[in-house]
Image (cartoon, rainbow, N blue to C red):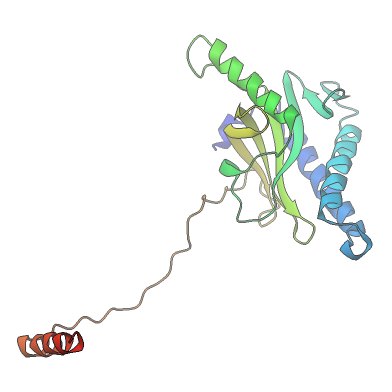
Length: 219
């Protein structure tokens, strides 16, 4: 999505906090990841989630317009008029944000329903801007943090988010110093160079020989 659609509340400094918090959480989780001792992929994901929350809370302590809240369905940030939660949505660089969503998160599903209601209440369809956002990240214990998006959920099946209204790429491990890195195209195969193809035409005599051979083979 166009970075021009990034809400003003997500300032450059706040985007840096988002990135630094998740980069640090993945780095710390990698230090304890050890499947042979039971520190498996599931525990790695939980550690990333809790460490990210801890780092976000500490980093925003001096920002008077940001409140860290933890009630009911878990922690979230209130940034001016916006709500932000953080969820892992994919594990691989092959995954695409358009088809990757938080799994089993009733809180994220409720955020999608809230954004959908705002769209319905606008003076014109699509007038209202989303207020509920997910700090959606891709990563795994072996490759670490891969990408981060600010994504606004918009639809749900009652339990899981099923679509985003928009997303904004704010981190790519391949372009770590770029503020709004280009998002990879969804599911497009890499171009393959094909060499010259030789085509030869058979004359009538050759076609007759093939036809004769085919007939004899069926007898």
